[in-house]
Structure formats: C-alpha cells, structure tokens
Image (cartoon, rainbow over all chains, first blue to last red; front, side, top):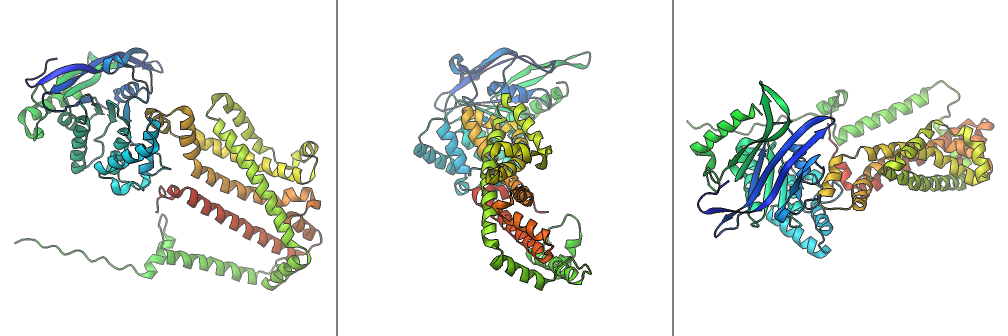
Length: 274
Length: 277
C-alpha cells in the first residue's frame, strides 16, 4: 500500500494477523489479516482513523472484542506498536451502549478511569475536569449517567477512555442512532482525538458506509466469501480502500465530491455480497 | 405571502379530566389527584369499618381504649423495644450472611453451594424449632437464629439473582479500563448493585416483620409484641389483639419508609432510571 504525495507510511501501529474464531462449532472469523500504518504528514500531527465496515451479523463485534483483548482468537495474533501485545486494559474501548458506571457521577467515572490507569487522585481529578471541559460536559460533571442525553453519554464515554493515554481506541458503532448534527459532531470528534498524537489510531467498527468513508484514511471491508451464490462461513477482509491514495482523505466537503459518491455506491453494492 | 405561525394554545386540562385519568390504564396522575385517591380509599375503609355487622371487629373508640390499656398496664413500650431489637439483630446478621454468599456467586466454585442454600427457603420455620433449639440453647438466640434463617434464605435467592443478572458489558467496561478483578468485584458487583440490594432488603425486612409473631411465640418468656398478641388472643381480648396488629402495621410501615429514605440517600441515582407512565 503506497501513500499519496505529501503523506508517507510509517511504522505499523496495529497488526491483525490470520485471526480465526469459532463459536459453538460455527466459523465466525477465518484468517482476518490487516495492518494499520502510521500516516505521516509533514508539518502536522496526524493520527490514523481506520474504518472496519461490514454488514450486521458478519462478525465485526467478535473481531472488535478480540482486538480489545476481551476474547482470544482460536488462531492468529493481534499486536500493536513495535509488535507489542494488546491485553485488555491497554486498548481504549467505547462500546455501542457507551457504558459508564451508573452509581458514579460523570466526573467520578473519569476520575476512576484515571486512578485505575495509575494517576494520583488529584492529577486524575484535574485531567477529568479538563477533558470534560473540552468535550462540552463541564456543566455535567455532577450528573449521574442516567441524566445525560445519548450524545453526552457518548462524549463522556470517549472522554473516560482518554483519561489515560492509549495509542489505540476502538469505537463500536459510534454513528448509530444519531441525528445529522450529532453525526457531524461525532465525526469531527473522532478526527480531533486521532490527531492528538501521531501514533493515535482509532478503529471505527460500523455498518455506516458514508460516515466511515468520511472519517477514515483506510477502510477494510469485512465479509464472507461466496460460493455458487451462497455465503461461505468465516468472515475475512474482502477489500481494502486506501482513502489517502484515492484522494478521499484530509479534505473538507468530502461527501459532495463525485468520486466519494461513486465509491460509496460501489461499497454499497459490495455489501450485498458480503 | 410569508406564512406566519402562532404557537398553538394548549387546551387547559380540567381537574375533572385529570381525575378521570385515574380510571384509565397506563396513566400517570399528578400529586393532587393522588391525594384525592388516597383520601377516598381511607374514607371508604373507615365507612366500611363503621358499618360492618361483625361483632369481632372493635369500634375505633374500643381500639383507642385498648391501645391505652396495653401501653399503661401491659407494658407495650418495652415489648416493642424487645421486638425491634430482635428484628434489628436478625436483619444485621441476614445482611452480612446473605450479601457475602450472594457476592460469592462470582466464584464458580461457590455457586452450587449458594444455589443449594437458597433452596432452603422452602423448609419453613416450624419444623426447624427443635433442631435450632438444640444448636442455640433456646431463648433469644433461638429467635434470632430462626428469624435470620427465614429472612436470609429469601434474601440470598433474590440477591444471587441480582448478581447473576449483571450484564457482561459492565465487567467488560471495567476490564478495558485496566481494572483488576478485585476492583471489578467492588465497583460492579458490590457498589453497582447496592440500590437493588437495598430494595431486596426492604422486602426481606417486611417478610421478617411478618414472621415476628410466630418467632416470638416460640419463647414467650422473652416478651415482645408477638408474645403480647398471643397472650391477648388466648384471653379473647379482641380489641387488644387488633390494637397490637395496628401497632405492628404502623411500625412495619415506618421501617419500610425508613428503608426507602435510606435507599434515596445512599443511591440517589436509583430513581433516575424509573419511567413515569
């Protein structure tokens, strides 16, 4: 995979190598393999946003859980920067329901994440307050999670994961159920978080093609092979789209570009076969 | 021509319409309507009581007189204290034993033991008096043991179910933050279910309170309002019996209310998830 002019590919920040998983005798993932490389743009701090697209039920969440370190594959390995292992706790994860401890306030949820991650109580509190302010939740620090709107809860859950710097952050269906304004905000937030550090990598697992195309610099399409019109068990990476090479990354007003629309149409057509 | 829109005036809902909602399913009513409903049923109960033909039911004045007699002549005050001491002692033991066992269900090795213990709720207390007497030596300790057994067997059943039903996502959430299993046990299992534990406790205290009469009847020398009611029953002093029942009811309601206040103080978030229909 070559990069476009002005963008170089650096070291591997995430490697998924031949990951397979069987559940109750059914093959769910079959040799999933892909690498994510550091995108280097001179003069800017550019993290990576990777979209993992696939239709519902194909095994995205299972792969998500394996990358997060919550489940083990039957075969294969997941490694991070400099081939380091990624056990649970080293990868930031925001699940689809934006979990927060309901018996703690928003601020307390973030402070807890900081102290678990090794911060002193005072430093954790200060960092939590700063993050809440930058996420527009400064006035909500004393709220319990049940009082937050869906969008606020999502931002609080992301902020919680940022309490302790982790180069890899996984988001499960972050675009689900959002209105257009909130969707724009989330997409902007994802890119901002990614660009906080050169080695930051956000993996967005979703079936929302348009939003994934908008935020990602690389798209992987997860799906099953077809044989005589029938799906063969075991999902794997079917297509890879280097959005930088296609000229569809780091641009404004991307969604109205003809090449964007054309690619979206092509991916949608592929979805039916996955 | 530009369209102008005036905000639509909201029709005023009459008091009568609000009260009519009380007769429709799945409706919420306001505070005023609720007061009307409660007042109506209290008044209805009073009228029924006054007009019932049964001689076994005392009149309000007879009840009041019996209360006075019990308080000044039969020492109902100390008996109430004795009973409250018993229920408090049994509740503390129930909470300690039941919570420890319920939380222990996170360890697979202990799960069959806890499930087996929860099945003991079918035993009933009467048949256990003799074996418990042999173990405890009788008296106050016997009553505490019986009451604790009765309450704990139901508490364990309910609380173990609460722990089992904690969604896996809550454990996953703590694991991805990097928490160790002990921390997860504290935050997700213990603190995370505190409001439900208090709800279960509230129900079990009510169950234990309902068992008080039977338990205190086993060793009447120790006193208590359970023993008092049995003595009055023996002498067919029905007004006194009903007066003591009223006291048992009021004390039970006060304890229940106190438990509710405790839950709201310790777990203010627990009200937030409730939906008003």
